[in-house]
Length: 154
Image 1 (cartoon, helix red, strand yellow):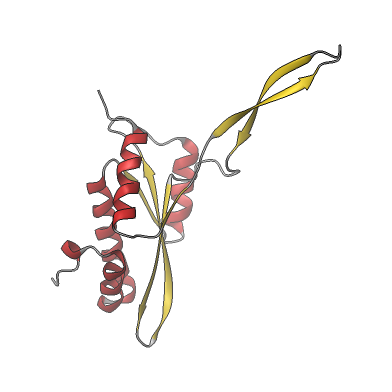
Image 2: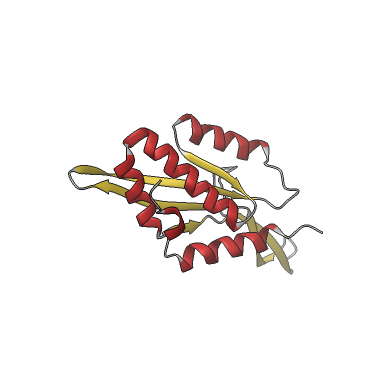
């Protein structure tokens, strides 16, 4: 039996919290509020009203924030979007659409199935930052994430 996505998500959120990595769990989906209404006959009725948590379909589960800089160069904000899936999980149409929008703007979007996948995503992000901005920026990026195993000089 596959591990539930909520369990994987909790593990990833704990990893980010312990590492003091600035992140945001984006509340997707909807929840229900019980309301008491009076029907047209004057009787009290209980009704469940659905409330959506966001307005954008396909938004990923977790957003990670980082700011990189290099002494005399400006600060560059980096957002990494993480869509959590279990072993059998597949992205919806809207999630794929959101991913393509982020990636077409040279953004960072990853489908992750474990904490190890998150570490791989950070390594990939470092590599892409290095290609775009140079070695000094990539090094600052990894320092910001406090990942000693990734800070080793190559």
